[in-house]
Length: 423
Image 1: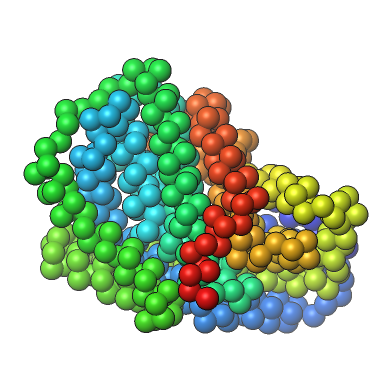
Image 2: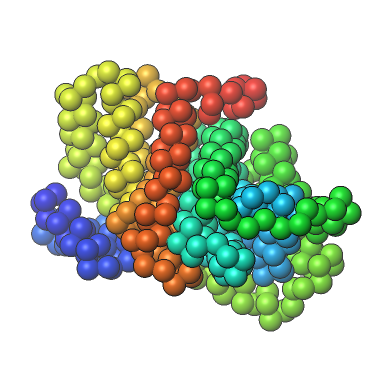
């Protein structure tokens, strides 16, 4: 029965079915063959989405769409370009810097790639950068988004395990900054070797104006993070605060939001939220089947029969998660495999907060791992470049991302230091 479940699931993924439909149809085939009553489907789906903290997801999605709609992305890019445009390959560094700032708004890698890429990839091509390099930088830097708070994958991880979302946000801060620094270093080295263009150095007046224009986006990130960590409001309340904040900024400060624009943002956010909630519901049903068939215990026992050495076990888990992340969207993969592997990691003596960061980092690196990395597809589509060329240009960035992953995996203090300050 489990074999049929997985065969149907992977067959549908291979046929390019959306992950939610692949989960739903595979679980339906299992339930019909196993003789369970069909009422199990809505019951388990509802129990999966009936989690209070998941109410924060539509709020953060809408806040990100509002900030993007009111021109915040362009302002962030201009500010980062004012700071780093005069360095060799400065536009690529500005691309990474903009992704780091925008991550505090979107919290997802794919939306980061699409939003930043639609502006930066054409701009970099126009300035004389190779198209495959521009696409690779954009796709690689988008992985910063789900690590630096607020992070939708971290919210999902917290809702699945009951871990403090505030601590998960803090745990991702240092790894996210390390990832940004590593990507900037690789980008600078490549730009020096290929003699990529640089722009005239911005004056302090220009930098000051750029900071003022991007100021409200920076404030939003700190407002959300310190509001949650400081106990001022819950993640769900923070998402509502973010929406109200974005509306006020768009209407009264930038004056770029219109009622028509708000309606478009609301419909887009509702569609994204609905598709995500369907995914969460089907994933919970899928997970219930796995638990009832004792698949998590079997997988845990299998890994532990290979080795009980903590270092080797974490290495095996990393390899498994990167492979899964290259074929499956981050949140879907978290819902299915993360709770299983968390038990194995905790048994081996790994802190659950640290492992959550490791799991999310693995899965978002998978988004840039050939052959199916979703962010690679999005960036190559914007840049109109063959996927294989973008993947080849992204290999140096992929290697530095893996290096950061290994450091976070084997040096617990990198993810546990900041959460430990609030114990």
